[in-house]
Image (cartoon, rainbow over the protein chains, first blue to last red):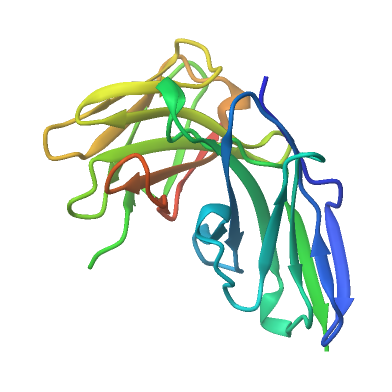
Length: 112
Length: 112
């Protein structure tokens, strides 16, 4: 069965500090990996997907197939990064294409 | 371009009743998926529709059903409501399967 683990429910850092949100997955086949973010009073939105290899708002995520991890990183956190972050592998093909399996989420708080 | 619209935003129902939630995807999007969000279970996949056909289904009882119309609008129905069905129900749309999912604001269902 597909499983996603985000070990930290809460993560607090100070502005300017590096931040890493952890995600480990157990998934059959070759999943496509996503990070979604939900800012206060806003809808859930895509932050980044590993296949595009883009850096969005200073965030990057490296897929480590050996460790089955997809940790989200930012070298210098900003107050506006405070939000709920979800790691979400999705099926990259087959009959379950398009289904996202969400982790429990990590609430990131960046203090001034 | 209008985003994903879910109606109603809030709903209060009594145990044993049934409820229908509606989702209007972004114009041109043919894929609609539904998720249930609760504090205990997090975000869980319900089902996905593409061109009026259900492509994927999550691990929910048969009381949860859905459909998609020719204009891509989707409805989900929950029959014989239970207290545990109280949740935020999110709808997401995509242009095709292999693209980013755009989420609606959700419908908050409370079962009393």
